[in-house]
Length: 300
Image (cartoon, rainbow, N blue to C red):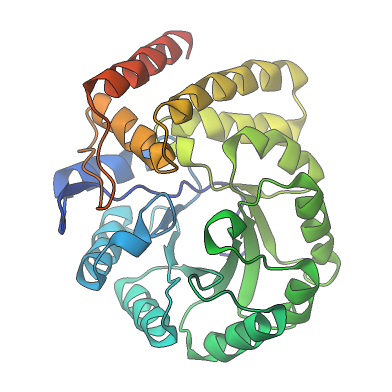
């Protein structure tokens, strides 16, 4: 996990039905993103529909991804849960399977105050067998990791960085200032259209959902941003902006995951079955995703 930089896709969870993995699709997907040049894989995050998966399926996913990655890239495992003990249990499974790090956002349903949140993380970390990356996802958990809370937690050596999916670049800039306290911390940005701006602010890379579909696009964009290749950035950023069109299809918040799974299904990589309460796109929406993907493929 030291000096981890680049693109770490938040892997979707390929499913065959309500509680069964699409094993062949998962294998193709892991190979697809690694071949695309990613620096790591993050499973059981938002894009992976983690809160909707059974604990048995989560454990199976961890085992299969670690086996398939086979040490080619680090595997980061989301352990967020409403129950403290279940987060610890998942962390132990991750360690047993050979994962490299854990990822934790703020517990959802009951909104925690910042003091409670700080104590929660401080109590949890000693129970974890692997390094921990904190994950800011206020749109879904309703609670931020405030910068001062993170500053207070920065003296814990087992915490190795922060992934921010708030979409707030001002917050992200403040976040990166924590490098003064922890020069070894890794800072990742979630929203893919902000990747270049975040790198300019000091991001070490992106945990970008679109990298499931076109990993090389995001790997090249990150590298162009690091090198400040403005001409290349302009071309690649235009492609990323065009890709955002698939997320505008459908009317529910689940459309982002639906669109990503739909695109991967269209590419022949894995099934697009969704964990309930969600459902896959219907034929008219699927057709719109297909049109965007085919148009992008012609330009790449």
